Image (cartoon, rainbow, N blue to C red; front, side):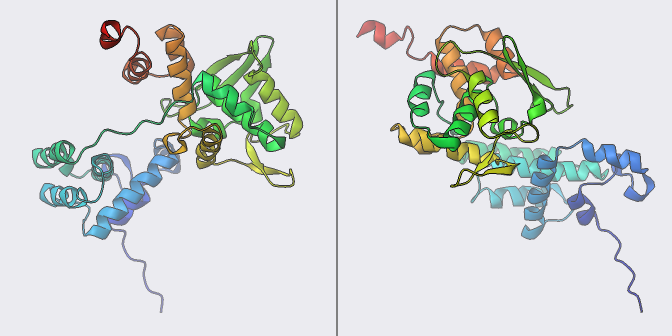
Length: 323
């Protein structure tokens, strides 16, 4: 005797994250509509939402839930997780409700008050990755040896010069690179601030010093005999080049390795240190705000302002002018 399949619950639909917009049952939507609904949320975001929802359900939450239940969850989990994590989880729970056409408990004043309270009592400043500055690059480059060193030279110089996020860096394929007489054009099909997938071109000119990112990229592709597919790949102890791309975490490990090698506190550095380093170094060199923003692709001036403010804290410092 065949057991009939269980009817899908709101929780299972929310976790699958393929529910129809405005609560439309998945079975009533055409395949084309479902494809575009899936494409509306980046895979990494979908996985993060699913993980947050699983935590909520394992705690004892339900979909749908009341504002009181969500407030209890936020307050309870707020004892062991940062306010940033709790806010992200509440957003995931909110999205699950709205995608099913259910009343959103996260919009209640009760839940919002709990989140504000967590921020005031448990919040700590978000730690920024230390920037790899221009003056750090040259001693780092001197530490690089062999084929892996050729790869790391290219990775660090391109990551710095193009102000790339680590996901953008390891996501590069050979067809994203266009060598021109002025240098290199890097084509980003999608980035964190480009969810619509419009794409962006980043110009990386030939360098005036030995630390030329364009020549470093050419050197890596030639040495590793890479003509298509992922640009940055693993290199084993025998010099063999992997066909698969490096992971996001690999970029952080590489940056920390060379930071440690030149005597910097490695724990303060991450994959984001290359992007932060370009912004900070350019600001110190007097590069205009517009030109920095053109290279980084920042949509908001707020983040750039913070980098530039940090880079200029010692310039015309009030205490320095007096003592």
